[in-house]
Amino acid sequence: MIEHLRLRGGERVLEIGTGSGYQAAVLSRLAAEVYTVECFPSLAADARLVLQRLGCPSVRVMDADGCQGLADQAPYNGIIVAAAAAFIPPPLRAQLADGGRLVMPVGGPEGQRLVIVTRQAGTFIEEKAVTCRFVPLLGADVQ
Image (cartoon, rainbow, N blue to C red):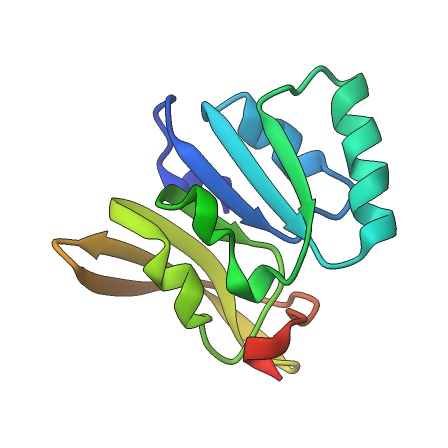
């Protein structure tokens, strides 16, 4: 999934679904700034500790509704979502910078496709990659 972001260094990335913090740690070595959102406060707290121990000062962990993204830090050059929904939440599309890429599994509980969205001159170009199966995205916009 990270490869689909096509990071070159210097980017601002938003991750939805912090979990253990592993992916955020990897992203911190590839991008200048990483904002990661986790809807479970206890997981967010654990990830903060792990990322601090790993020496990832460029990662900021927030406990919030990932479907809303983090508008106050937008736009993002890359957005990566580690949970699936039937559609990409509109706030995430809106927070994508021109030339940026969003990677997210889209589909129902029986299976999804990894979707890559590129924003070019205000339009969104979608491509579908591999089939996959992720946990459901939790949040107000996808219920």
